[in-house]
Image (cartoon, rainbow, N blue to C red; front, side):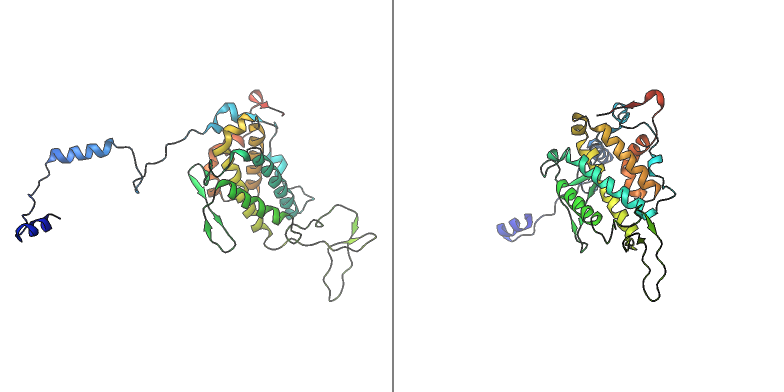
Length: 279
C-alpha cells in the first residue's frame, strides 16, 4: 500500500521502512504480556474452565436405593446360558436407563444441549453408512433408544424362546436335517439360536447406553437431585458399570471419563455411613 502511494505521487521508489531492532527489554515485555493472558488452546480458543463435578460430592454419592454388593446381581448363574444372561440384563438396563432419562427429558432440549456431551467429550452419531453426524443431545438419545429398541425386540437377535424354563425333553437326532434345540411335551417347537454377532451387538448397545448415563450426570444432575432421583441414578449407574466390567462389554477407554464416579459408586458403602433411601 505504501509503495503504491509513492508511485502515484511521482513514480519514485518508496523508501524502505526504518529497521527496528528488538531490545532485550522489548522481548521480555512481550513474553510478559503472553504469560499474563489466559491459557488458550493451539487454535486460539480459550480452554473451557474446569467445571465442578457436583455428582462426586459425598452428600450425593452416599445416596443409594440398595445396600448390598451389586456384583452379586451380575455374576452368571450356573444354570443360565451366557448369551441368555446378557440378553436379559441388557434389556433390563435399556428399560431402566430409558426410564431414568425420561425423568429429565424436558430439560434436555436442542437449546440446553446443542451437542451430546459428557465432561470434555462430544459424542457423534454414525449412521448405517458410517456417516458422522453432530446432533443435539435429545436427537442422539433418540437414536440410541430407537436402535436398542429395534434390536431387543428382534427375534433374530434376541430370541425369546431360547433357554425357556418350561418342561421339555431332548429331541431325538434326525438324519440329514437340522436338529431342533427343544422338543416340547405336547408340541414340537424349535428354539432360535443367538446370532454369531450377538456379543458385538450387546457391546455396541452398552456403549451407547453408557453415553446416555454419562450425559445425565454431566448435564442434568442438578435436575435429578431436584427430583430426588439421584439415589436411583447412582444405583442404576453402579449396577450397569459392575455388569459391563464383569463381562468386558465396554472398553475401559470409553468409560474413563467417568472413572472417578465409578470408583466411588462401585465401592460398597461402609455400614456406618450407609444412607439407603427408598423413594
